[in-house]
Structure formats: structure tokens, C-alpha cells
Length: 108
Image (cartoon, rainbow, N blue to C red; front, side, top):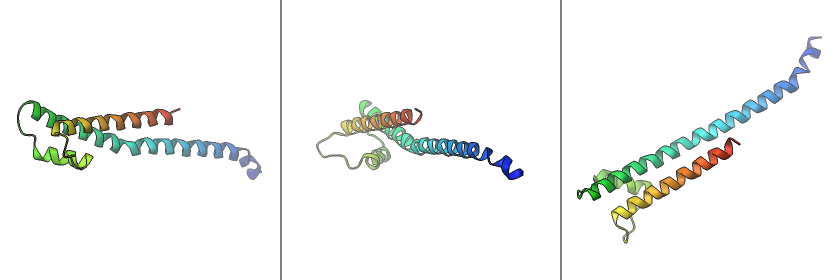
């Protein structure tokens, strides 16, 4: 009789497990994007430090310039450092917007 009592619960258990797996998948997807958001935020902060130094008529920290190049690749020859920093900020903001849009799509 115990086997008969367990059978009606099995479909509900399968549905519950399916929903649980789906929720875990969505959470993992959202968490996997956090490092991307942080990398973009770090790039923007670095670019802002470089721009601040330039506008204050002082040399940017060489470590910050290296970080920018690590983030975005080599600086093109025909682009000034301030434009390069602005480009990096624009890329990071665009990437953050894409991540947010993807998150909004996950929650629907």
C-alpha cells in the first residue's frame, strides 16, 4: 500500500524538481555575469582616473594606463589617451547595458 501512496506524489515531485532546476539555472546565469559587470566597473574607474589626471594637467599613473590597455587592447596610434579612455568608458557602459538587458530577459 505504501507504493500506491507514493505514486500520486511522484508527478508533483518531478514538477517541483524541474522548477528547482530552472531556478538554479537562472541564478547561476545571473551570477556568472557579475564578474563581467565588475570588470566593466573597474575599467570605467581606471579610465576616469586617467581622464582626471589629464584634465588636472598631470601625468596619469602608468599602472592605470597599463590596466586600460589590458582591458581594451593596445591604444591605436591615431587616438589620444583621453579619447582612448572615453572609448573604454563607452564600451563598458554598453556592455553593462547588454548585461542588464539580458538579466531583464531572464526574469521574464
